Structures are given as structure tokens and as C-alpha cells.
Length: 268
Image (cartoon, rainbow, N blue to C red; front, side):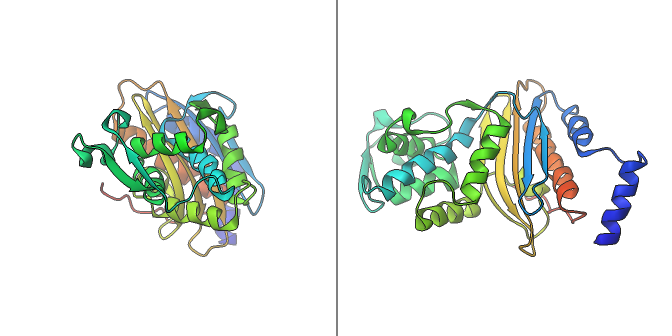
């Protein structure tokens, strides 16, 4: 690894390969979206930023700050994970919601714990709306509908370092759910090394394909916090945008950690 890293540095200095910011911009130029990136290698403290201070819509990435606000309410004793919540048809959210689809127009009763799992692991919008209400509404959430890659990276870093004002049990619960999440198989997960662990949260809207994640290397020695936001897309396909997120992740990871084999892209 040391020899390969030294060789890569030689190629970079001699101009045979691009700096990582240039690589990100080249990849971004292949789609019709504006792309913002922020990343941090925990062990070295090295950072990468492209349009890091520009505002982007979060989409369902906002389910992470909602989950943090909600679990703080759990830790305070205001909410119990074992409590049941009844959601009326009028409260079903639009967009992606397996809960709404399974209810077939009828009220549904679920435990708060199951709602948390549905929001983070399945990106269910009805679960998100219900938990946001329980947490105290939008004013309780640190980030709203728009944020910058740098701001989201700061939140992700506080979460990774357990500086999120959560109990250890609540922090670990969110990490487990995010690691089990099946969403985003063609985004950060596709650009991370094979057998790496990724705790992530995606966001998808018209013209927007986002992903944030904590990548733990296969040997457990390296941790890369990754934020990729896009906006303004009109003509590129979903596959093209997701491929760009994966390619950017791969370029950033290689720059921060070293030359690692990429995770095989999974079919969704």
C-alpha cells in the first residue's frame, strides 16, 4: 500500500492524474446537475470540498437530523420506543411510503420503534412525518429543507464522534439502522471498497440525487465521512446521476485512504 500510495503521489505531482477536486469536477461535468461534495478522513483529518458552502436541497437526507432530534426526545423520556402511534389516512405522506401503500386507505397503528426503522432503513415519508411531529416539529430539527455539504458533514462528524447529545444506546441504534439500510445501493455504497461498511442516508427529488454516509474500511482502520449533493438536473437519467455519486465517492476514498478495490455495484 505504501508503494502504491507513493506512486500515486508521483503521478499526481507530474500531472498524469488529476487532483481529487479536478476529478470531482470532471465527473460532475458528465451529468446535467450542480454537484457539491464534502468529505473527511477521520484518522488523518484530511478534508475534501467542492461547492461545500453552497445551498442544496436535502430531500430525504433530512431524515437523519429528524432521527437525531427524535432520539433526543426518547432519551429525555418524552417518548417511548415501545409506544404505539395510530396514523390516520389524512396523515399519510406523499412520495415514497410503503406504510401508506400497505394501509390501502385505512388507519394504521405501529410502534414508535417500527416507525424509526421505516424512516431510516426504508426512507418512508409517512414514518418521517409522524416522528417529526413526535419530536416537536420542524423547529426541533437542526437542518431543514436546504443545507450545504459542509454543514451536513459537520452534523455527520458530530454523529460519528457521538457528540450528538444522544445516549450511547440511542447513538448505536441509529448507526445499526443506517448500516442495515437497503437504499442507495448505486450511490456511496457502490463507490466504497468491497466489504466496507456504510451507514448512510439517501435523498431523491426531481433533479436531485443525494447521499451521505460513514464509510468504514474493510479492515476497520479507516473511516471516511462522505456527503454528495446534486441539484438542478433536468436531462440526465437517474442511473447517470447515481453513477456520478459512486464515481465521486470512489475518487475521494482513493485520495483520502489509498488505492482500494471498488465495491461491486448492486442491482436494485
